[in-house]
Length: 68
Image 1 (cartoon, helix red, strand yellow):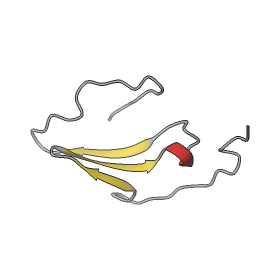
Image 2: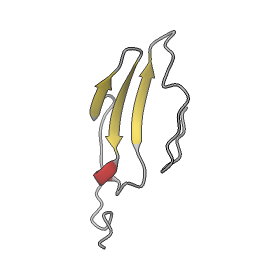
Image 3: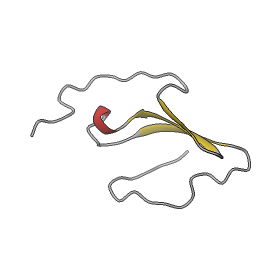
């Protein structure tokens, strides 16, 4: 099987650029994932409205997740 990252290229997106998803208390913008990263990782921006509950407790069995 060919390595999906063998022909990797640089992805440059500014603030707010990418695939955007609006939710009641938050907004997500995915910069790179899936085919762009060979399913190895995901880069995304998240905004939670003041007083919003955020994403809530959950897990992804196939990857790790960090927030800052």
